[in-house]
Length: 491
Image (cartoon, rainbow, N blue to C red; front, side, top):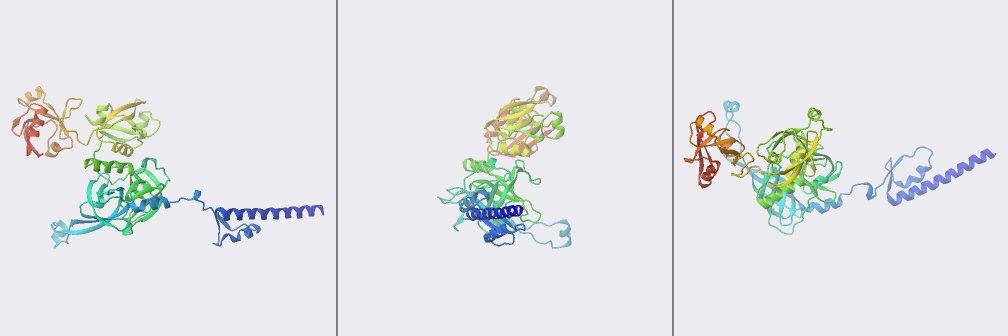
């Protein structure tokens, strides 16, 4: 009887305890959240579920604000500043070949053009009507209209475009517009929530959410001398028409401009790309202040650090950027960087890859100065770099004494060279870079004897004659093989 009484007492106490637990749980969930049964029924069956001897068939979901992302503030604060961009352009109209010969050997495209309509998105960044979008949205546009979220329509003009970064800046004549403030794209973390706002398939003011899937993403088929390869990758749904729209963080700040998707179908398949806001901010600032992009140049040929390079240089990791070549008289050359250095930082920004290095340099203007941290001979070294522009001004003198002339370098021809070519005077082209001389076909080693029929002896003579020229420039001289040659280009 004692044993039976003990068992009965224990069972009774267990039942009471179970009832209290069930009551407390029901009370808690009724205050802070909801209970959802596996079969879809409401939480009213909570107590009976606890009292069953079989396992409970329910799960609990806590819907308190601390446990799930809330995008309402970001969406509502940014959506009015994202606009619908409609573009009309004229493109050549093609027609079918008229016979079999044309089918196999090609045919000329007729000169008459056909109107083409397209659309995209844009983001108002200043209350006086400046709107950022993608270059590919407004490229070759003959007419641009911008529709605000309140349905007001405005004609827009192009302030500037930059194909290398796929950024364009538009302007409408209005004041007091809603804006999206710039955020710091460097502060984005992997897995952080973001929202994309735009007009996919003409569905205006569409908002989607996702996370930051990757940073510094490169596109293998993206070409261009100054291309950016540091896109933000997200899984927020982006489709045709989202181009130029906003990528916003939970604080409602612009952290990127949506520009592309990775897809084999042409529609969203889980991967979208955005231009980092720190790049966008610099580009549009240049457009407003200068009318064009002032791009800084470091002047190096680089590659990622490979296992072979890391082993040879006794590096502890594969991080950093290996310098393959230093351009003569470039910013890196003048700062003392050398072939074989590994760049670890530009300013305070780590450069773990060539794309990261390019992004860091893109934030500077020509003439800006910063520290560049390199690994040389196993030791860390900090060098002060003054960035140059894409093309240095005519007359700039490098540390080797060569004078810049339309992207190339000149110096007074040495006496032995003049004697070998039987010349009295001349100016030698020591380097040929992107610019008018290269486009005209001038090769390294060419000795200029006359400019516009005027004899020249020094690089300063060449520049002086060119400055006075009101039309084209005509160069006469001798090639590196001793043959007479003539080159011309427009000013």
